[in-house]
Image (cartoon, rainbow, N blue to C red; front, side):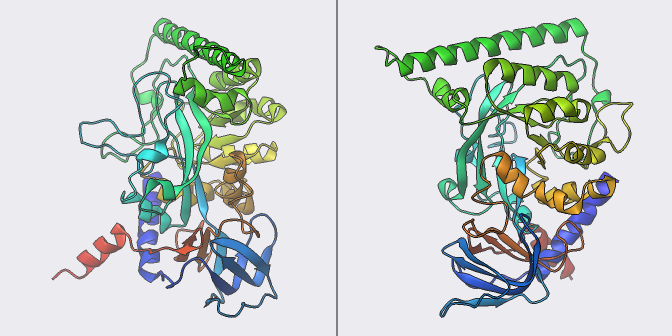
Length: 439
């Protein structure tokens, strides 16, 4: 089923790219006559949007275009805010076939690393994702423990600085776990796109897994203690204190200004991560929390947001129901927990809308499904005043479609990022035309 959905999404993406149009303007324009899905409020039928210098400055039914502002007639079309992948490694690629990807750095503690600095703007996955309505992605560095800062980027730009929307929104912590089976990655190494399951992996003896867990917890606790001593010494303006980039990166977390983005997949890891946060008095966002459905009251009581992994994924455990990943978004919504959906991948960001769509038949309201890849994603990282919905004062990250963007048959007509119109030409379109016109 997963593979068929993926192929269908690929064909829909090609069809959308073929019919898309790119208006010859930038920064300032007037969209007139479409159905505006604000996401933060009701749909505005036959509405208009005024964008000036990349920001939304007017919105409603009875707006008139100011003199000299280009008007784009979108009668009969739909307008949505651009989608946001809450967890991605798009553009973080290997420098060589034998090398490690730029998303990963050796060592246990690298909280100072900024993934946005090494994103390849020419990566082919970026226009493919943009052409399917995804305008932003939260770059998540990978590693053994503290992997680096999360940075939100726009899927547009030739220079990394121009792509960056928010350079430091959280720090990624892969919380230690007693793993007797290896949890498969969402994106397998190499060219094999077929998903795997943990039960296919070699079983690790409990004693060995427990020893590794204890060692990592000891190092993690020691690092936090050292970071707190560094903070105290800095606040006291201690003489002879040498600046340490790792501890400097931790200061916003220790001061409550930034959360830890904590990857905790199973129930025990989630409980341990919450206890750790309580003890350290820090804020956290639970990431890739597959078994969050087992501890809903605890997560709700702590007010912790959750970034779920892909909905279109196989069950993690052998005895899980086939639809476990499909029903978890609805479980969190019914429990009143703010959540979003991320792909945790470089190749799958383009299929983000279908990850949200898959949860709708299993109890998640349609409007909440789109929130999970737009407004909720922005709000979880403290960016709700800048993007995620169509409201005055926000960035003009907009997509114009001929239907529901969660449907694979919908075509993306236009994409605007920070008010700039995007060229929706993709490699998929180029290959389609190449082989369509072959002799």
